[in-house]
Length: 358
Image (tube, rainbow, N blue to C red; front, side):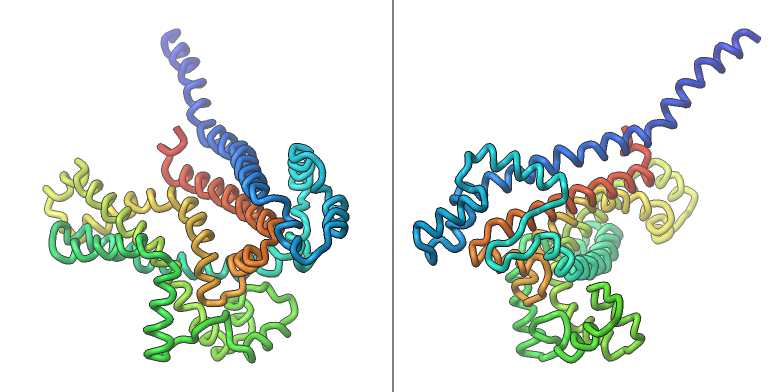
């Protein structure tokens, strides 16, 4: 009786530690958001200051020395760089990302105005990435070391090695200029955009607003405008997904339990679908956070190429006008979005695969 009690006493702490694994993992990952954002924001701040103060870089050539000095003093850029840095960190922690120099807009207002367009493009691109990368990855694993596998591996390399702006220009040339199947640029036709702008409680995401109206002409117009930008940006991630699915499916098919199922006469197709497919998807979820960051960086070039008026398009415009305050604020906001997205993806991966927690 005493032996049983001792075992019970010893087993309880072990069970407690095991149960607290997820909570401890989530807590650690959550607190890692703070240093991640801090490092990214600090890097952006000091890199922007390498070219000098933002006002001189933006409008210095159009002002006299007296006017420039007055503007610098009013904005606080005549103070030591360390003082400016500490003040900027204080503003960031209170949610104040500053105002642009060229058009005197709050950075948070820019996020609300143009962030929905970038979110819509990223969602469309993820749909393309999953629709292309996952099925082709399964096919490459199923036909391992045959000519379709070799072709798909080359296709995957081309997907993530081709610059997204080049892919966008090529798609526009073929499908817009030569074939005339899709529009050249924009998120929607002018008349459709006018209708969407009159919808009360607009979300800023065109496809959602169009679905709310129930009008197929609006939906089809938005999908036609989104097709080429989504493909150009989605193929960048589809190549990564294709190789991940192929590699992990091949690895899973070599496991002992799959070999045992194969010895019992289970077909290869059923092995692939029932036993190997779901475990192979776990690595895709774990790298999803990094792919979101890749899509956001690619959105700058994609939106510029297709004149898709989102955060990336605005960031390129502010870079062209040398408005470093706007660039600094938008990049800081994107850093926060990427850090939070990585946290959510890590939590999802831990819920799906307990091995991630340890």
